[in-house]
Amino acid sequence: MSRWDSDFVYAFKRSPVACVSAGVVCLLVLAAVFAPWIAPLNPFDMAALNLMNGFTPPLAPNAFTGETFLLGTDDQGRDLFSAILYGLRVSLFVGFAAVALAMFLGVFLGLLAGYRGGWVDTLIMRMADVQVTFPSILIAMLIYGVAQGLIAPDNRGDLAIGILILSIGLSEWVQFARTVRGTTLVEKEKEYVQAARLMGLNPLAVMVRHILPNVTTPVLVIATITLALAIIAEATLSFLGVGAPPTEPSLGTLIRIGQDFLFSGEWWILLFPALTLLLLALSVNLLGDWLRDTLNPRLK
Image (tube, rainbow, N blue to C red; front, side, top):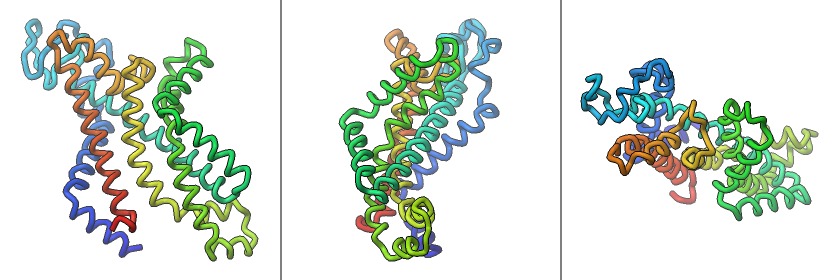
């Protein structure tokens, strides 16, 4: 294991794309985590906003108050730099939570389908086949709409983030399940699994203790790539107005707000949140591609 670790670190150091991508991702994650200490002000504190600061260009003094903002302000006078940091927190939280849900569900169903076989395998894989015929964003929108319809109107705002996580997570489990099932079909025929069965271990213990550790590598790669997809899906849903609530705007919500003012000359309200989302999604994707190439021995 130590040799594998050293090879992994060596390959990481030898890849400029991986180093830069990991650095950007870490920087954005740290900026989101420490947003309350980095941001000049809380952009969602109504008492701290001054409407006179609205539509202030980047690094230009406001015509009325004389205040200067690094990335400018939006129509409500919110500091755009602070809004991006707080919006990044929402986007990353939803992305990580949705991937965790998709990974848990996909790994469980993949292990179950591959180990049990028979009608269980057929049922799970046919469900996956049906879901994969539809774009994941449409599945997420459908789940989000159904969940919102089942919740009382007074509680929709409070539960919007949870529903968003649920809808994206349930739309991204298929790739995990298919990969884990394929690996499980191979691993369950090996001698160490047969020995575990002869020792009298129950099927759950065999799957968790013996087969699961051997599927972690492809799952890690899929999780990294799925994180980028989940962040984009969250931004898309929020851009369409069915994602994060206005009280907790994500990067997608900020982009939707900025679009309303793009053609009136306030370009910075759209540009900076869009660039942040692009930088985050691209860095995670490049890091996931590098992990796939490095951890797959067939590509070496």
